[in-house]
Image (tube, rainbow, N blue to C red; front, side):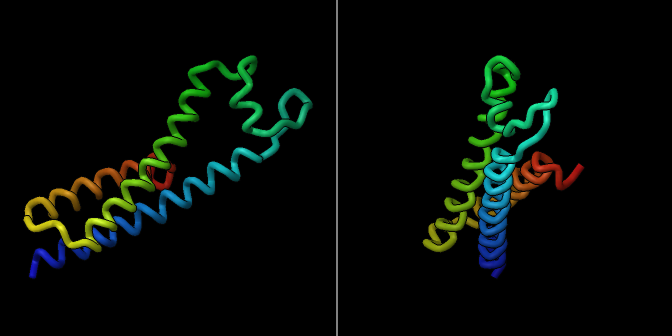
Length: 117
């Protein structure tokens, strides 16, 4: 009985991972095309970030890391959901460990997206 509850909770965490990742990816895409004014000129945020003469290379690498992290969250969510649908988890401690790990990573994602401060 408890094994099924843990699997159900893991399925919910997987769905939340997918939803949060999709929201974050859409937010990043919309933010790329946001114009803002810098020194009287209106430029897109993507031009500002990827222009080597305005932002140093470390800023561009951090932005690319943020995009890769969002995609990894999406892949992790699909992976967790696929495991639950195939019901391959036989051991209750492994399922419980996956739930705890998923909650910690999800909490980190919320902090990264500034939903929790």
